[in-house]
Length: 367
Image (cartoon, rainbow, N blue to C red; front, side):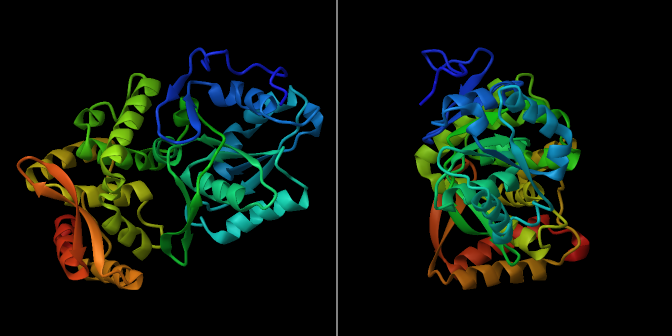
């Protein structure tokens, strides 16, 4: 392995100005302003068995919006080192995180002879990371994989997830494989151009961590003074939750998935749907406090455009389809102490709780 080509690490695995964010994953996640544009090519060239830079193949999967803003700048660091990466542009990735997208990526990699010494780079939000991560895992020849998240949601969730997930026929995250990047580079530079609606998408996972573990995370959510330090706190919180019981991280998923599935991933973003569901999980006093925060952050506080009956029907159909006798549901053991537990319930008991939650967030005109 030709580690002498371009120096990325010192002997203690430290990059000055860059933090190693804590997680229990096999891969490391580095966070620092400019790290994606200054260090991606260096890292790849250090971690390849290809004899000469010009023999190395690098494919970058991205969507048109991100690549339009950043691809030329990202590409330049490779060109300066004698590598010419290729761009695989994907369209409508937020609503099209499907097998056909993975097929498009794998077909390109196979047609152009990519192999285990070459690299696939995911440059984008959570959907891009899912699709590219899925492709990297299923490619029979094997390939090295770098994840470069460009949204807060992808930095918070996509960079430390254990699975790459795809939607199937309007159903969220029906297929999954292990998510196994060789490295993740989280660069705050990307957040400067993220549209407001996409930016708010990243708030919900952090709100979930705040509800379950570390309330202070909400205080700096809109404009953290030091994103590197803040993401470090977020990752540490997630780590504590996972060590307690990883199933706690499903808090709010049931209603959020039903909302997204009903609207076919169009009316509400993933983060908006989860934020609404989380609002329904807490007691009335905490819900009122959260609503004030949601309004500041630009998150919805009511589910509109659909009746309670239709979302409940979608929710029930999903539970019936899964065919499980027992349902795992995260719930408050005691609202005074605010202790969250994982409960094993019958489908009828779970649906009763979820219907009560749904009624808390449906607009009056839609009940």
